[in-house]
Image (cartoon, rainbow, N blue to C red; front, top):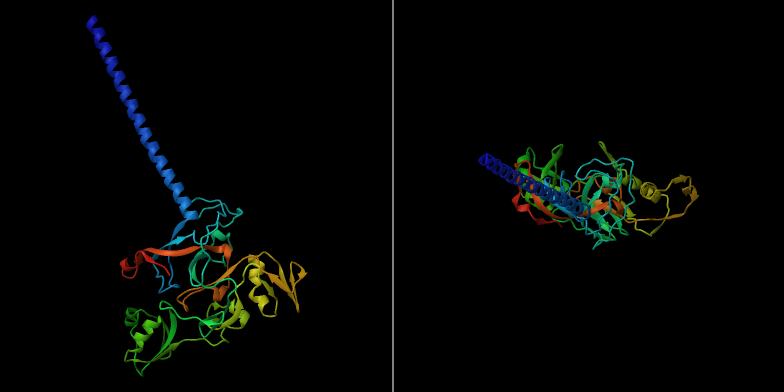
Length: 365
């Protein structure tokens, strides 16, 4: 009887030890899961904060900035340079899901620099009819900053009276005249770094840099190469409409001069400039503008001038004849600025199906 009682005591003790061990394992498992969950939550919150206020990754989807930025380049864009914006909507992080119809009051934190001429800038596409931060992201070069006077003559920008020098990475469309009964090989042009856009009669229209132009000029089948410039009277081509340039009765090869709006700058109205700045005054600064014969009305009141409420920029792609930019749709408001492109962290060549190793970690300028 005593032996049986002793066995029971031993069994109960073993069970208690086993139960304790099971509880300890469960506690350790819960502690491990909690630690991982805490780490994941911390990483997620940190990623949201970094993405919203410090730096964000973007991909180049189109050739409008070639040869500076290539289709397939992956960029890091600094929001600290020009100052990050506070959120404008309530949404799910890292998705396009957000509460429509709700727009939060927003402001911009101080940055450590202003946008300089020729900075490469990411901004929200002004034409979209959306809350600003939910508009499509575009990337272009800041060719005009607030207070600049710009004009375009035969594709060249004249900025504050000085003629712009073409950068080595700028692409333009050139007209290439070839010798009688000669043909250009599209693959040879492509290998040289150019792109045949179309042909007109015996001439080839090729999008290329100045360096590529000089190389092709040395080919035996080529007689002459010169910039393909549209006459000022041509203000519509196919489905492309030059809404901004139409205020000058021109096109994106010839327009201006015009002033880039600056906060606090007072503009005296004239017959021409009302149409140039109509969208700025109405859409981006929230006024009603009417023109009745020789009288301009702003919010129903006669006005001889207008004072701009924020800064604006004139953004242009480096592939000058393959970019839809400010020459087509006008100015970019300061509250549409996202950040400055700073570095290429990866690049993928979809034609060759391989990375462009020579572009990885290249600084952007």
